Image 1 (cartoon, chains in turn orange, yellow):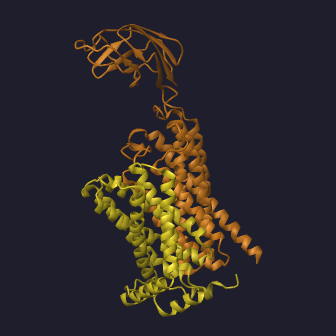
Image 2: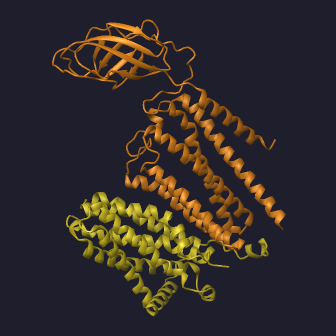
Image 3: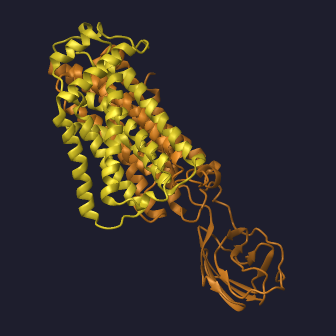
Length: 334
Length: 241
C-alpha cells in the first residue's frame, strides 16, 4: 500500500490535535487574595484551577524553612478555599509561597513585618489530599502559560514542517543546477509555496501565543526576526520567478537564488543569534532555559512528537498534490 | 517550452573546483578599472548619493544623536549606498559582450574579479561616507571609540555587502529587472551581515576590548568567506544561456 504514509499522517494529526485540545491541565493554585499581608489574623481566599478541594485540606504559608499553618480552612467549592492564618510578628523572612495539600504556589503573596526571631509557626507535615482520580493524564500547568501550553502542539510543528519543505526545495534546486530539469524546478517552487503556508500559520499561532503570554503580538526577538526574514526571502524567490519569462532561465535563476538564500538563512537562524547573544523571549535562547528543561514533560512529549510527524507528513502530502496538479496543468497546456 | 531537456542538459557543467586563475582575474580587474575610469560620472553619482543621503539625515535629525542612533543611521546610509553602487555591476553589459567574455575566460574568474572590485569600491565608498558623516553629524560619539576597530568593522562590512550583492546583482541583471528586483532579493540576504556588523561597530564605538569584539570580526570574516565561496560555486550556472 503506497499511500500508507498519508493515513499515518492523518491518524497522527487527528490523535495529536484532539489530545492537544482535550487533555486537561494539571490542578494548580492560580490566585490568592489579598496578596499582601501583615502579621496578625489574616483571611485568605485561594483560587485553584482544575482543582477539587476536599473537606480537609492542609493549608500553610511557607518560605525557605519557615512554615505557618492555617488555623481554620473553609472549602467554598472545588476551586475556592478560604483559610484563616495567625501570622506571628518578626518572621526571619517574608512568607511568599502558599501550599494546599501538595499544590504549591510560589511567589503568591508578600508578608510585611520582618524580625530576627521566629523561624516557624507550629505546623504538621503536609499530606496529599488532592483527588487526582480522572486527572491521570494531564498537561503541566505553568504560570503565564496556563491553557496556552496546548499551542505547543500547533505552533512548533509549523516551523518544523516549514524547514522540511524548504529543505526539499533546496534539494530540488541543487538538482535543477545539475540537470536543468523543469520538473524539479516545479517541485522546488511548489515546496516553497507550501512552506510559505506553514510559515504564515506559524506566524499566526505564534502571534496569538505571544499576545497571551508576553503581552504583544510581535516582539523584537531573534526567532521572530528569523521567521520574518525567512518569509521575505521566499516571497522574494517567488517574485524572482514571476519576473522571468523563459522557463529554463527561470529555473536556473530561481535555483541559484534558492541555494544562496538557504545557506545565508541557515547562518542567520543558527549562527548569528549565537554570535550576537541577543536577548530572546523564546525558551532556550538568550539565557532562558529551554522549553524542554522546565515546561516539557513526558505527557506533552507523547503528544508533541506525533503532532510534529503528522504535520510534516501533511505538508509533504500537500506538496505532492500541488506538484501533481501543476504537472497535469502543464500537460493540458501543451 | 520549445527547448527540450536534452538540448540544455548537455551543456551543464559539473561544478569542478578548478584553481583560481590570478592572471585572468588581474586582467578582468584592469578591465573593470578601465571601464570605471571611462564612466567617471557613475562614480561622481555614487559620491553625490552618499553626500546627499548624509545631508538629508543631517537636516532631518538636527542636533545631537545618541550613539545607537548614530550607528544605525550610518549603516542604513551605507546599505543603500551599497545597493546603489553595486546594482551597476552586471547591469552595464549587454548580452553580446557577456558572450564574448564567456568565450574568453572562466566564469569563476569573472565573479571573483567582480567581487574583489566591488569590495574595493565599497571600502572606498564606506570610508568616504564615514568622513562626510562624521563631518556633518558630529564626532562626539567617536571620542570614546576604538577607532581602529570601528574602521575595521566598516571595511569588513563593506566587503560583506559587496560579497552578498555581487551575485544578487548578477541574478537581477539576468532576470532583466533592474534595481527594484535587486532590492527585494538582496535585503533579506544582507540582514545577517548587517546585524552582525552593526553590533560590532556599536561595540567599537563603546570602546570595548578586542577580546570581546574579536568574535564579531571573526563572524564577519566567516560570513564574507562563505558568501564569496557560494558565489564562486553558483556563478558558472548563472552565466550561460
